[in-house]
Length: 500
Image 1: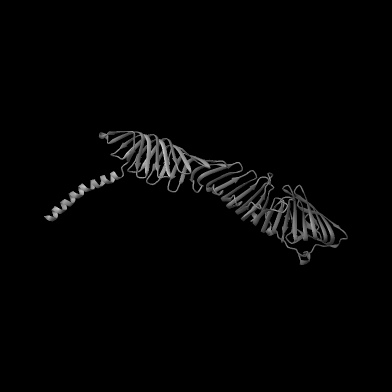
Image 2: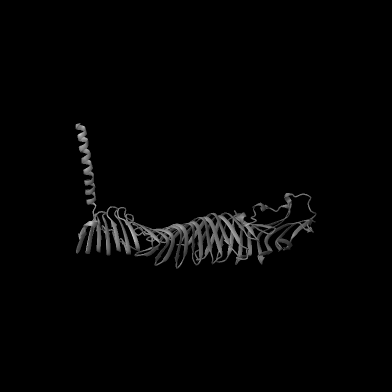
């Protein structure tokens, strides 16, 4: 019996105590009235009407306005005219009308709305702000201005704790130097970094940039663009999976499916990794690197190497160097070597270490080969030391010409003459309608070779030639090879794809 009485007493005590505790908690969080010129109370509606120099406080939040309605039962305030809501010394919110809920610490602001911190001012016509979590947002369009830029968007979210702004829909950033348009953007005034999410365009006086992801550090002038990144200037365009540029250092990189177009020189560079230095100006591209000198007529030059470098020489002229596994293709000429250099001032391609050139039916080799170009066409070439030309008559007979040095001439992009200078030797198979009728082996100091339709048509021997014309041999022997003979037809690129 005593236990039942004690249990009943405890139950009744709890029933009466809980509402009291709730009332005390509710009273603790109630909006306080600090000042008002006029106060009217409507007891039937649990409403207090305030007019003139109204000042209200809720925890660390101070609200001022010309007039207000305080709903005691719901702990809600409606403030009118010249409304200002401050949270500590970090957040200042103004508008024409504010509805503030003291229980949820959420505010709805309408009219000429401004959300300000120490570095930026957000303007919109409707803003909702969660004072508990320090998050505000607008969905009807807004503009944020700071010392360096102006940002517009259809929707925006502000995180006061981290000072992060998120913008979505028709985002536009305007600065003194450039304009950014994006689908989604994040900006932190303290970091002064803009992050892009979705299709983005950046336009300045000197460049156009587009991407789908990236960031721009305004303070340090460093940027990174990815996902279909593209940059265009007056002189060139660059594409890649990722583009990075540190302007103060004059250093940039491009990675993944890199494409660099020089519109002035009509040159395109391809690769998967590229690096650029501004001072002194130089660049490098590797990983499937390709150089293309393109022609509207379709006779483009394709060059592949492990690494391509571009730099300025001491006189200020641009040099392109390619090394390791160089292969060249054009419609009328192909080539291969270990390394080469190309000077834009004299338009000379210099090929080093086991260079070889193919033109029509002819294969040309030497210690070094120089190709002199004019415009996009080869004008002439020089073959230095152990120069040799081989052309295949059939699978077992090869016409061969060898000399100390050679010089070849092109007309309308076709080889028509070759001069052999010094220590000339020749093995030649005269024929009658495609049938070999003899075997001609000659030594001669200088030789002139005339070419037509990519075939040797006539050989002129100069300066005391000596040799014999014998019947055609029944079998192919080593005697029918000049010293240094090597047939490299299997290495010949036969299409732009063969340069790899």
